[in-house]
Length: 286
Figure (cartoon, rainbow, N blue to C red):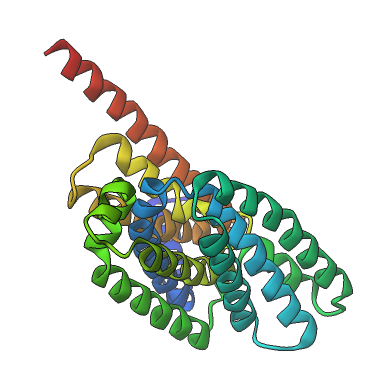
């Protein structure tokens, strides 16, 4: 093979990659939006110690999506209904952390069991069943992208409106209540917003992997900064890099997109943890 052949192969590969990217443009936009919103709301998930709640909501969301698939309804709608029910139950019955963990522990196996039951009764394409667990980000349609953008925009606007009282309640709930912050409505409102984000995340990246974009980026950012502005911005950036980067890598390979997203998210966390440990040692020396 001469240099001309090598050049043709390289440019041909680049052209093919560009053509594939054009075909999955919806997926890239979906990943970007989900990474940004998931990273922002993930800050409050970590501050309120609710990483376990994300998984609990995702199981009920999975059950709702599976029920909709079985009955021939819109899967996104079923996922949203399941998520909002779970979020409301956790928000109302789990006001205290100990009660919340108990409620989540009860809801998780119940939702997973229901979802498996509905999927076992479903006689359609096996790919549809599998996608509820691992997502289908590489086949996002225009209607699904529209749903995702609309829901994410609503969540983002609502989150900005309650940002200050939610931050106060997340960091010091006793002082927030004493200062007159309506902690119960704020907490319930946050849970419902979290339910919406989980619902669209489950539909895109699956019930089993939702924490990779809603928890890990914020956990990584918290290892290297505590700034009120830097923390959410870094978390959103990490979520964006993990989601979009995972899709771009998956296009070049033969594996599903989910392992790439979860691996990138994990690597970001590892790097931030190492960097945070070094910062701590330097600060102690000084």
